[in-house]
Image (cartoon, rainbow, N blue to C red):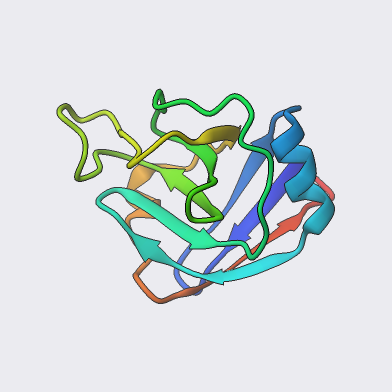
Length: 123
């Protein structure tokens, strides 16, 4: 399943994986939220609790994840305040639900407080 994320300053697509959590999210789209930033991670509340099965601390640049503690979607594009290298490290375990190939430079344009929408795409 392909989805598109859209803010005032950046639009990008992502491929969702076949996990239960990704399927739960897809059934609720479109979703809108307000962007928060934590280092080189954006996240936003989605308004519902999804499955936390398969949660991990291992994430890569470009991963899209669900953070059950905050009921949030996260997009990782570089080091976070918890990182000890340039690799992203979440605050607590997340469920990887997809991936984007957009450049981290583009994701850095997304600012705290921007509106964000996630919706299914026909592509």
